[in-house]
Image (cartoon, rainbow, N blue to C red; front, side, top):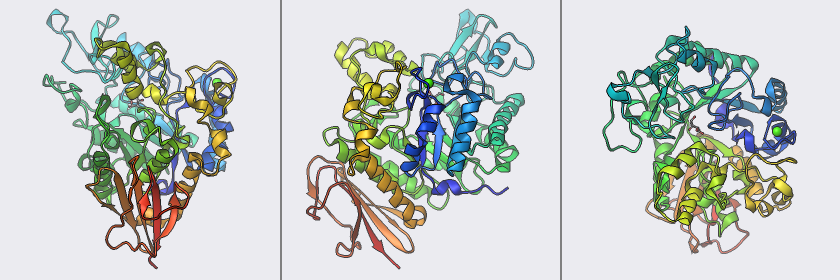
Length: 551
Ligand code: GLC
Ligand code: CA
């Protein structure tokens, strides 16, 4: 079957299920809650949902540690709720995308339990190595979350590799039986009717033969031996040819540390193995590679990332566009301004929604949720945050360390969705599994429904406009005023129309320039975040989308 390209016309909504909406009052978000809120998602103009993992899991990494790939966790509603949701979504013409997490499993998965006891055929499902002389680790790699990448298992008497948490042992993808399991998982969900997969850290699945030591310096020690490893394309092609190509589905790969040139090896429309890629460069305008190495926000860095992906993929591959997800703090608190909260949230939306690609909107982004800032470090849940907190900057004053968490933790964006101004932000009638962000009385869906100029309504207008404009889907991207550190300006030029998007990233007014060749007099203002004013001035965090008819 020819793989359809319907995903190019879509806008996805990401549900991080624990914190979206609790439907049964036990304090934990679930699929009944999602069913209740399908109207909300659809009202944004979103026609697809990507679910962060909803499979059974001990929850060591909030579901990214899976103990059964062929079921839905009972706390989320089990298979019955999932089937109901899938039907409801499909009857609205909405697509459902599952998270495929196959770089690693939970250590409580049956495969791992058997593997550590050397029960066949599971003995080589994971990456086991004996201890070196004196109990030495097999190599010097670091995990991404918790210290060294190796943990000794007393049952088997060997070390196992885990690139993430101790409870997330890496699968041995070189074992053909493991790849058969992956295909079985894919087929299972596709046969049930799901429409695609977001593939978790999929660029890590093939490790360099011999698992060699890395140099002493890199921050992610070992990464160059497992990111984009030797057989990653071969394995992905196998999944595609044997399974994915036989279904009307698509895939989006999560890929830390990837540049367009490498990305094209995966996502080129001719000969690629997947359809889109979630890159991290657009997340590094205020940090070095990771939120834990913060730097001052640089608009130029952000613009370089945006433009390089737009320019290099054009005509060859398709972009995945996003501002937020469950792995990064809230964007208004990072790239925007909490002082100009509504203005900057809207400007950020305009900065990415009119680029070419398929946009994703993360729950809460559409109402401009801001970072959670708890009083105490004890309240953090995330495994990566906890490790970082106990192991770095330990000599700094307590308040400074806490502020580091506010700025860098994934938990800053994982608090319950703020539905209204009542207790627990309308997320649950029970006791929420996680703290609610104090900002909920001011920032919530109900309040923004009532306000035509809210961030929520801006998202609706922007998504609707995007879908009307064929130049966004088919046009040519161009960046203007590249050197400005305060203004992001880009145009999309199609056959019949052209748009110019102007976004101020500044709290001070500035002159509103027009690039050469763009006629101010004939420009129509299609969208903006201020009511009428002086057209020659951009006010703090103002954005405007102008259009021209070329036909
Ligand atoms: C991805 C997920 C993240 C998870 C990690 C390990 O980066 O997005 O949430 O912790 O992989 O599975
Ligand atoms: Ca629940």
